[in-house]
Image 1 (cartoon, helix red, strand yellow):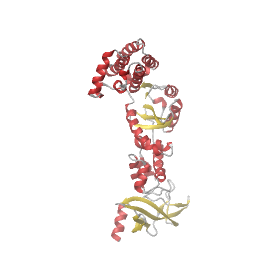
Image 2 (spheres, helix red, strand yellow):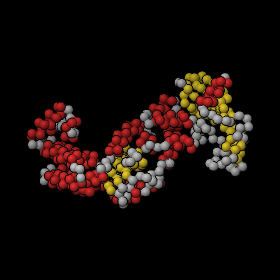
Image 3 (cartoon, one colour):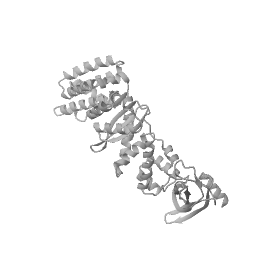
Length: 411
């Protein structure tokens, strides 16, 4: 037994005065469980748990505590210890902090770290079933680590950010802000108007961020974002993301198709033919679009305008070239007698400088677009969430590059 106790003492990385005093396998109605009992050497000295206190003392008295630990093979494992209380001359009676768990947690640090890593990939409800725990207990420490890690975040060096909204549920939205250089989420805020930018800025400042240092902001053509950015980031250059511009062009093309299909049934079930580039079409779709292009369709003309837009982004190396390209394209659209394309041209003119800024600075929201796919996956996993805070917590956990290990070291 002595060799076993020494083995578990070493495995748990315990230092004096802590030591494993007993190890038992117990049979319960749920199967076998491993129970590890930790004690301390008589007369052992313990530090006062109050920050920066250097006082040490022997145990004043003890209180029995239990923590869930990582499974030992397939067996549920628990650690039991009589927690010492010490009497500090400066801070009175204090319960000692143990090296294997956070204060007031019912789980060991290793157990919490394992669950948090699993939560990046699985639903918390599924994890709870796997390990036979209530998911509320797991969420409690997941949120603790994420919130504490966010408190440690320093945004004083951030100079380029991306802002985008994504649907949370139905017509409810969240706005996500990303550090474009570090490629990580730095803020998640409900809504998608100028107030969301205000809320982001307030949080940004709390973490040492300086709105005056922001040089680049990438976003879509949301008027709410435009107002919030103008009020809060006076030294920034807004870059309208090229993917959003092309998205608006696709929407305009589809509006033309929807109107034309009312009088021309040949366009039925052709929506995605006009929304994709040729290299993303099947051979059947390519052939069908080629045949349709011979029919002098309004939709075909609108599609050619969308191709012209794409050509500007692909071929123009300077802002001067892009300016000339956009002028010709907008003129073409305004004289096309296609109302959706005319409306799209007006949208471009309303955001003229912000769209041309792409050719000046070459920033996009590609990072956010990639993260949006991850966030959508999180949203799918979030269907069983009891509140929106869980959704935000997982976004920060998966996309925030948080220093969770720093929180664990702080205890």
